[in-house]
Length: 173
Image (cartoon, rainbow, N blue to C red; front, side, top):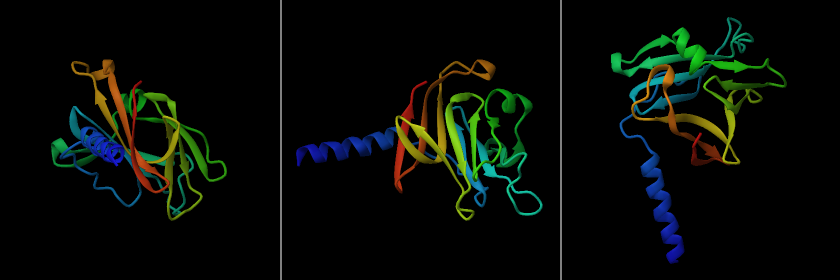
């Protein structure tokens, strides 16, 4: 019983340590796949399913990336060319069997899959620490004193679900 209580306490404590308090949630919810936030501001990078005019997934750009500037009245803007090329942009393969493999340019070793097999429930899958999870959001803990093109990351938190249970996986690059 003591071991169970100790494990429960550590689980609650680790969730509290990893959580970010008072961070806003993106206003784009309808087509939201996941979003990225970091500790040096509350502006958010939003990854949404991108539909074409025929209401199908856009074959050229299946994932639309915007940034929501919570520091400027929650204004929504496209990524800058530098953000797209060096930080938050994507490289992806074409749709094959209702799946798209992609990477975030600043995390090329972390592989993601956009699964479109259930049209009512598109989802992004990734594997962290040997656990495959359905991704909801990413939080970057940036190193103090780094910024711009020289920004370094202390660790990355991946929030999602494994078998419909909430999980947080920490990755230290």
